[in-house]
Length: 270
Length: 224
Image (cartoon, each protein chain N blue to C red):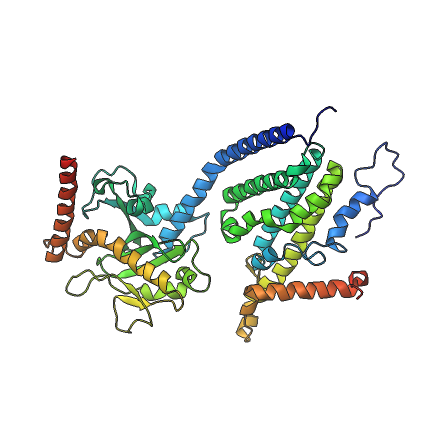
């Protein structure tokens, strides 16, 4: 063969052909397997939502149980009001993007909430996203029908330290959340915090943090606060449907309003 | 396992499909030349994913598919690979195969794929794969190379499953997720050995397997 397989020309040609062939192969495989992978991700999301109300579903039964127990969903805007005609279905909302996507206008943000009916009890499941030490953390918190008592939580993480921060997805860490409240008796918003050194026994708004997992614990506290504050208006509505909004909330929405006005002004100036 | 299955009386122009030599490629990695216990390759993944038998089986199969397919492909193109970029070509092909395996696992056995997490991706760096390509596939015909890949993948998988059986049985009292140790034993005061769940016990288990293997197969013992 006249072909010199060690010549530069041949080497370049060979690598070019190889790269193209491999790229096409991988692209085809990835595209054809995508629907099944997405279905798996969807089922896992259902399992996570269900586990926050204490239902441990296998991947196979997740869809049936989800359809049975999750009876409805609500989409809430950044101002805490229910959006009657949301752009996306609650389940399909990319929660992470609502908090992290800087390009998103406040008015476009949509925050989902799932309503679960189990054993005659209604609970409201709130998806959460935040940041741990090494990467994203996320979870679901189920609030009882009184609008302030935690019924259950499920947290998970991408890459927290095994044995330390990674413990947030374990039962022993999640169990103490049950029965805590996210509002004080006076009706003020008091998100649950992971308390370093251990929470006091009578602390209704704190759980034990993880020793050696301080940054993950703090990230978790921040996640709970940042997420829940968007839902406070809605949850207050559940607590006392007839009562007018309380003063602190009015201040909050005012602050949001003035922010909105600011952005309008900026646009006008531009 | 006996190698006497080969039929020397077959008068074929080329070597028969399963000649003595080819069969040895499959049986060797199980004993005399096991990738884990004799060559001590791929230990890292063997420690990490042998907590449950199911994970070990899937991991063993994945490695087997990658070693066999990469051996086959590289043996087929071995006369056309420019020598200077030989390693890069091997890496690209192995990486592509590993991605294919990873995607397939994600689509069909999602929970196992999540449990194996990064270790499927790390098959790329598993010395067994590159080692077999360099040492065997680049110098042999496609069929023996393929068989060699199957043999080494299976030898790796066999040790993985053996370690996983011990660890799952004593660590959580289950096999393949089914309760094996009866409740009555727990009622009598038996407790699962929590240490078995942790990676160091995998190392000790592998060590015990090596010990047993060498005491049976004395030619593996190095003379110093």
